[in-house]
Image (tube, rainbow, N blue to C red; front, side, top):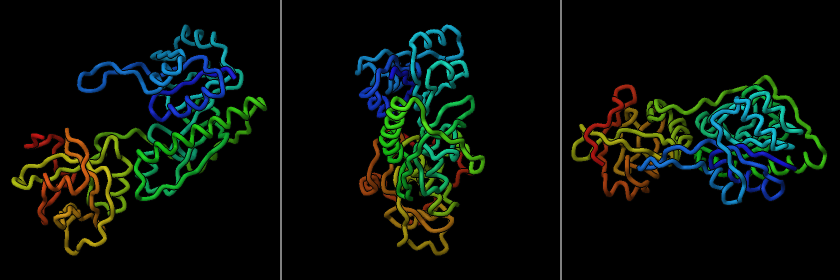
Length: 329
């Protein structure tokens, strides 16, 4: 089939590569280059880089509502448009251009977690399963008929990064199979999403990334893992030599500290020299930590340069300013 692919981040790259092996990719649409890195040099999206490596034309309109952009897309005569984390809303006039319609790969088990951050929200909410769905797109936000799903388990140890990579690969296979069926039959069997069970995965905001140790150990673990590796859940950790000064530290991986004595411990209290931290119920022990501006470290290596003392308290979110104090890291 003659296909247009629309996508932007790393998540979309495996699907692009898989479809390019089976179909004629007329063009790739992606988000425009944006400043990145310390030099703020404009950097193309991962999808743009992959498309260029494959010799496929890349386009990055800032909107698809412009009539000229719609006519330029129409001139490509696509049989189908495949969308994976593109970042732009497709107007109805664009949805009507391809002969077979537009199909989206979404990283959740629809109708649960429609929206921008389904992977993170599923982990943070304590879900035990996630997955990917192929959806026939309509004018709504992730409301179209579902044409196939693949389910995967989530555990308390699963990070957003791990689930992202798994769903990217599984999703590529699912979409490739759907497109092969569409080419062979000229249609896909799709079913409307149920009205029950709809949830919305809002974009992660900075204000919700600070760790609240008053929550249970399992909720804290899920919060940490749902935000790992990006944007990262963080805490203010007291300096060992000056406890009144605090350093911003991200926790990228953690485990339950079942051997720690939480009797009479307050939430956020450091329980031992191995950095067990009391929660509202139970305790957690970080496994991988990262000081601001530094590389991630395993706990043992981190504590060699930043030892802690039992009894120190990590302040709760509501009592700490958003400005880092005394941390020249």
